[in-house]
Figure 1 (cartoon, rainbow, N blue to C red):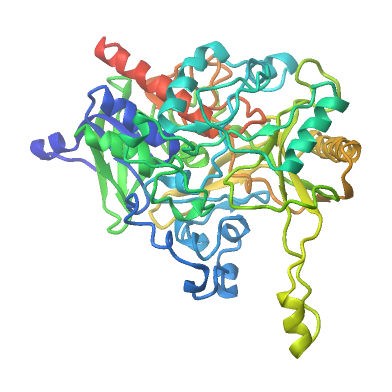
Figure 2: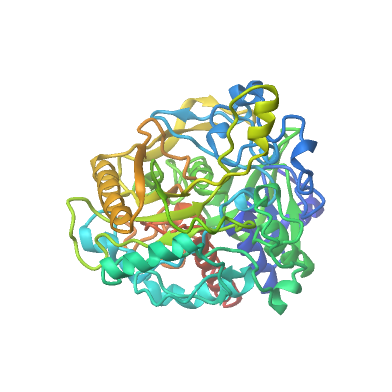
Length: 572
């Protein structure tokens, strides 16, 4: 669409445009505005303001029409979103409606999305582990995917930078495969988790550490957090509703209001990005095409630099849809690799057990965290018949075992008798999948969404490496729980659980050293269009075993400051 109103064009021109307002988009906005750039932040979903738009945050269970459960009609109408653990009556309003945002599943894939200001930063589980050099070395070591263009030393200062601002709790554990960070005081392990930790140290000579998880909760707010208007975590474990205290990190409570205070940020919700505009004469991107979510009117916005933080798969979609004479197959896609090498975390399997000791203690209070078993397979050498490895969550509880049998007086008597059972523990595997060309996304040639944008076609699946890893997790964890004295050990695999439900999809616009085999350089610039930066999960070359959000934040802060430096030197 052409525009000829000069004033209107001026009103739609900024120094920078950020596409997306989730975890990485919020950091782009904070860094760019903090360095003085007039920045437009585009969010395809509705506005959600911190505290004001958390409608269920203070509700008691009995105040929900269905006591927190999702009615069958709503569950049936949203078969994908309802598979997510957080899709309940208290938080369903932060999930999209499946039928309003269709996509093509060439293979089964549960694409979990939160279209609103703040994106999925309102819905995440808040695990925040650093990557180690072993993770950055993975592709070069085993030959799958391509070599990373950065290493741990490049990103370590930026981990520290974002950890201090976001607020990360944890212990300094001194593990080479899980570097320490700038931590607030840790949560405490339960007595059973401490027992398991001690037993693992004893039986495996400290080669299989168990630690308290590192997570984005303010256990002891520092001045930088109170300046953001955030307070201490209340351990309510109602995080998925949005936290009115700002006790956990979200774009809504932290980076976006911080950017807003600079006076440099313009936030535009309900703005569906259609594509990025590439000017062949200037050989650079000049702006984005935006469709109003309600009126369907298209408008163009212009800027010197563009950060694409739409979340992994939507970032791939936008770039694939950004075609021109120079880039007929998508922006920056000279090598035809855009949309390929998608990876995810394998959360398909769990294990549970009981412990018959510590019967003089019970679970008291809440803790928005659990223990964590860092990767111990194939870290320092290749020791299995599968590549890479897995980490695992580990939690414990001791609950009331209520007898609900009987009728009348006998039933009432049974219900009033408090009786605790054994301690229960459970662990879920978080396995690293191998980025492969056969795992890809592309655009459907016929089907379009409500805004006339081609639907995304997803073709991602498990492979033999994943199956071998699951078998090893069952074997190793069964052995570990057995030597630690646990009983009633049960493994649970769900082959019908499609990829995607981990919500850790990554890749498609990977970083690399060679433009022939990658899309982005070491500063997250498209090799072929260097004023466009991609810093969300789409940029990831491989996916490690750690939760990825902290790395997205660090990579984004690093790239945004580099972009400003280049811009001020007029090199962009």
